[in-house]
Image 1: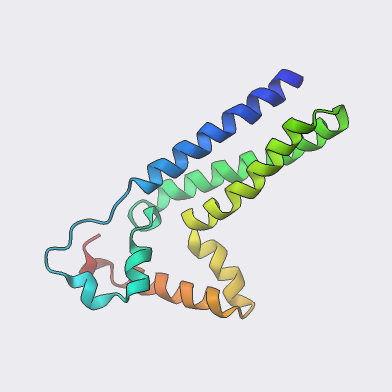
Image 2: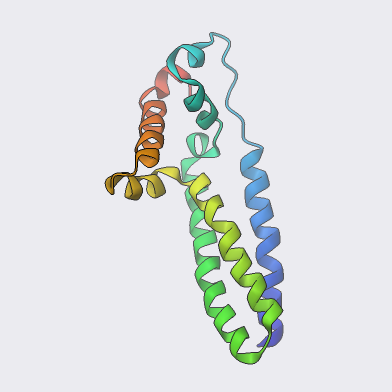
Length: 142
């Protein structure tokens, strides 16, 4: 059981790295007509480079994988604390903390929607920007 926990702990960090690097490599398509500059604000233009807009199904799968790894990691961390493997438990808790913002980045609507419903202005603004981009899909060419 000890080596399984160590193996899981050492495997999730390279997996997280692959997810982040693959999503960072996604770029918006060329815009020879400069339609994006006309339609989108500067903040929306920055958001448009998110992998979420090009590959929503793929980023959703990445988020599901990360969420599974986080939940499984919490269970493993509790077991490792009980067995005295503190460094493994600390690495699993650190993964939980590091992967949380990555999940928001990969699936922004799900995370901003809850906060926007509670009345948070930042989340409402981000959600409005995302909806503007999604409504302008045909014009933006994606």
